[in-house]
Image (cartoon, rainbow, N blue to C red; front, side):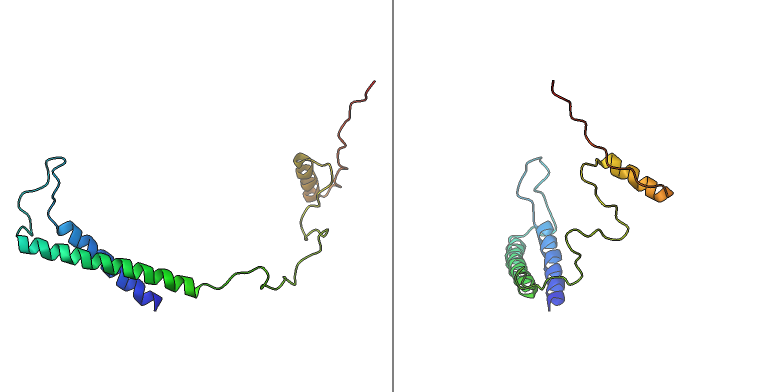
Length: 135
């Protein structure tokens, strides 16, 4: 249903653009408008105005219908309705292949430990920040 409505909507859009481009320009902002055109008679101008109004209304209606369809097809999302994931790890567990974070270690220390793990060397102990002694 939604695909059919989208195709119909796109056909309306193309027809609306075509009818707007066929209309005679009323503005002479740069001195380009006016003159003879494809649809110059008053009867044709009324037909194009009506066609534009009808296509504009159809465009608005199909846009609303597509919005309503998207709203009704959307699944309700609630954190309370979703079950908890059964494959979650405990809070203190480290996933396989991940580097455990050492308290007090900087990012540079963690990267150095990762390089040492890759090369096979033992990781270094976390650096303790130096505290200046008060005298």
